[in-house]
Length: 272
Ligand SMILES: [Fe+2]
Ligand SMILES: [Fe+2]
Image 1: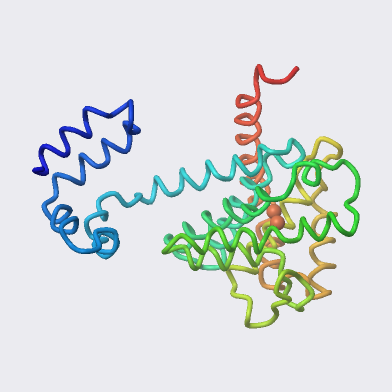
Image 2 (image 1 turned 120 degrees about the horizontal axis):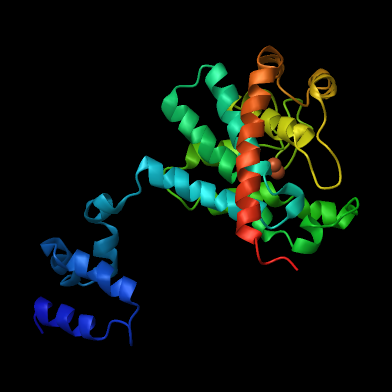
């Protein structure tokens, strides 16, 4: 059968036997002669896998990647009304601190991706634990604490996200080595990881939750200082929070206010 006849036949079965989206994708590939050359080899799957340049023009742009990571952040956050805007606040805080620490624009983009995806592994944590109103017992805490490594194993499957994966999966590590999951310390933790850790704690302290208001300016700085004194946070990053606290908090608040509006719109009409 000729290539044209094969494509013609597949088009005819679009919407019945085959998913129209897949037929359309194949249509695009079929215009490329190299696709048919690969199909004529002994192992077409292997040949196709070794022709990444054929798929290059289908790679996501920077904007698409940001939008996709933000969509994931909503999926993570919207599972629980307790933390419905947390990820957006962490991402905004982390990017701001990265900028003040001298990260360039591409590095700041990486930080936004890491912020948006830092709690990705929580998707694998059961809702009863995520949404539990009281404190978690030892076993529930152990399940919850698996989220950084679960996130890491998902992100590792995406080529090009190695840096993002490291930063994202180390957000519960602490410079003194008492964090989890790896108990990493000192030079094992890059500045990017340390920034994300501070951004996570800062946002968790300042954000409003349905059961409590966020902590104020002075109290937040006291907690951060105390944690830094116990080697739970990086002193340089904490000093950046001190230096830019008001501007940083405005940025965080604006990002979380926007996310809250999106959350309400998403659930409008669904709540009893
Ligand atoms: Fe986390
Ligand atoms: Fe978090």
